[in-house]
Image (tube, rainbow, N blue to C red; front, side):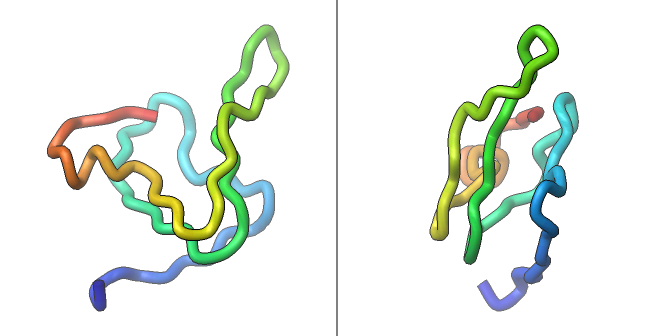
Length: 68
């Protein structure tokens, strides 16, 4: 836990692009992460993650490879 690095993102900044390897683990301390996709040229929010959420946990805790 003490080795984790804190990084702040600007509203609207993309954490991971489609097709990228899910090689980073994110713990959300503050704010909201929107998981979205494009369909027929339109953006759709699939899920909203809030404080306490963990993103890409399978890559680390289940030892599975994953892509965004």
